[in-house]
Amino acid sequence: MPFLARLVQDGWTSEGRRIGVDARTAVLVEASGLATVVGSGAAYFLRAPAPASCQPGTPLRIAGVAVCRAVDGATFDLRAWAGSGGSVYRLSAASGSLASDQAGGGV
Image 1 (tube, rainbow, N blue to C red):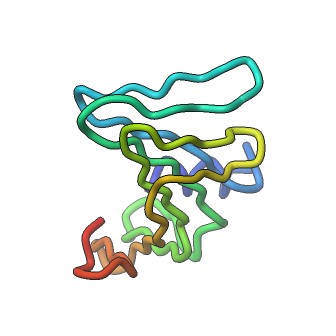
Image 2 (cartoon, helix red, strand yellow; image 1 turned 60 degrees about the horizontal axis):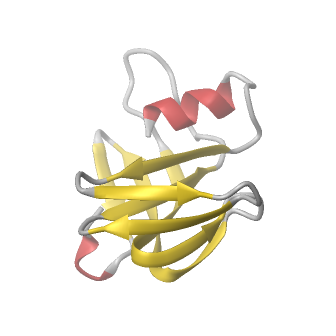
């Protein structure tokens, strides 16, 4: 989350985008930008807006980080940054803690 926030804050991009992949899982990307998740874990496609606060020595504050958790067989269009076959939720960071709007609060 801090890395995504810094990308936006420092002007490298207007919205941070990253992919995280569990062990025993892969994201297969075609030339068209269509990605397919395969394996026993999940892939996480994140999109972060500008942070409320991202300063050295202070806790990160950011809200509305969109997450698409995709499992085996799910597809994700990297050009449109949208997918199908996964669950979608949002993360936030404040006071040194992560929070999720998912049922159960899992990140």
